[in-house]
Image (cartoon, rainbow, N blue to C red; front, side, top):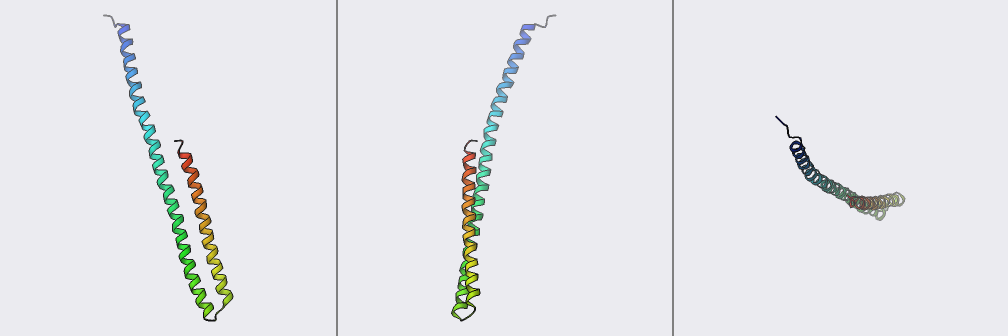
Length: 119
């Protein structure tokens, strides 16, 4: 009984070709899906980082408003002008720091988004 070497080789090439085609289709799509998921997850995390920076700035502005109001009440009431002025300066510095932090977050997010554009 003959095994038909030529027929066996032809079948093996057909199987190999089918497996290669299936792998290419599955793995090619998986890579694109993984890249899209990475970009989506990174974008979501970056958006949350910006939101946190904005929230922090809002909190510092609220604190600055409260400190300024209390300090002005102390000054108008004839209290310790120097302590009130120092408190306002510290609150203003906290706002300036929060603004700088938000600028740095924005710059970092911009760089990361630019890097993600290549994925």
